[in-house]
Length: 242
Picture 1 (cartoon, rainbow, N blue to C red):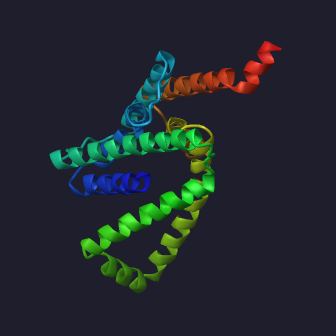
Picture 2: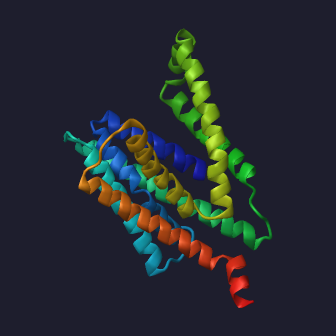
Picture 3: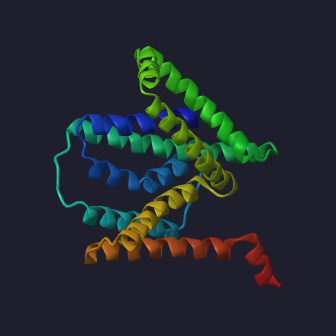
């Protein structure tokens, strides 16, 4: 199920752009995926959160939104269908987080410990089967293969992309298994902030007051979450009791 929801999330994001949603709006919407992931874990995974955790997620989303908006110099119109599809993509993100949380809980009930590469392998197998079925039903598989065979440069780029994706997913599934899907969403959202900061310092870009405010708000939320995780860790609590 988690594989299917991830495929549909990617498909809905692509459809939102194809239906006229501007890339800035799509990027901004996806940067707030921590909220649906949290909701999905509440509804499907049986999770519970403190007020501090809600405020931390809100700060990271708000900071990322401020940062994203300040980078967009031109406004563009987005179609109604594009908005619908990006909302459906966020719903799928939430369902993915909830299902992953429930899967971990169910495995622990029967005395099993999920392993990152097992998690990654079976999730990707599910994604491949769902995507393959959809491609066949829509008669897109053969056209896609012919296009790659006629454009080998793109084929090599796709292979390189897959290799990089596999390496990156190793860390993502390690985080999901050993921590939490919400923590994973926090990491991927943080990546966006770090990439913007690197762009600023390495390429000489400038940020407005709004942009720096967004960076500081998001970093504040991230640091608060890190502090919370450290103080709540079993090793830390054991040391304090000693």
